[in-house]
Length: 182
Image (cartoon, rainbow, N blue to C red; front, side):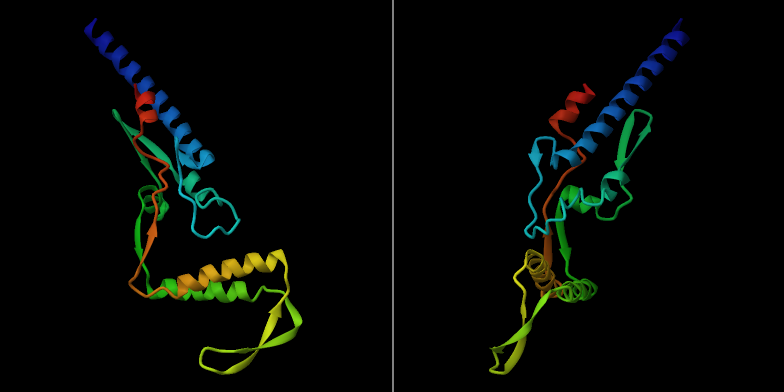
C-alpha cells in the first residue's frame, strides 16, 4: 500500500509540474505579444526606427527561451548573449569595436539617401566654405536621416562611457506566476 501511494504521489507531482511548466511557457511567450511583463509595459526605445518592437523584431530571443524540469525545479534559459541584459536591464561600456560598428552603420545609411541634382553652399564651424548636396524631401529620407543620426550619436559616444539598457523583463517571478504555481 505504501509503495503504491508513493508511486501515485510521484505521478501527481510530475503531472502537476508538467502542467505548470506548460502554462508558464505559454505566459512567458505571451509577454512578447503583450510587449510587457504581464501587466508592466516595456519602456519605449529612445530611437524608434519603425522596424518593430526591439525584442519582437526577429523573434530570435523569443524562440531561444527554453525550459528544463529537473526534479521539482523549473529552470528557464536562453542561448542569446543579450537575453539577460534585456530581461534585467543594465549598462554596457562603449568599446572601440562598438564605435567602429556604429560608424559603419552610419556610412551605410547615409549612402542610401536620394539627392537632388543641385548643391548648396555652407560654411563650416571653422569657417571653410563647402558645397553640399541637397536631399530630396521624401519620407524615406526622413526615416534614413533619423536612423543615420542615431548611428552617428552612438559612434560619437566616448570609449568607456555607458549605454543604459532599461529592464524589459519577459521571464521571472510575478504575481501571475505565483497564481499559476498555486
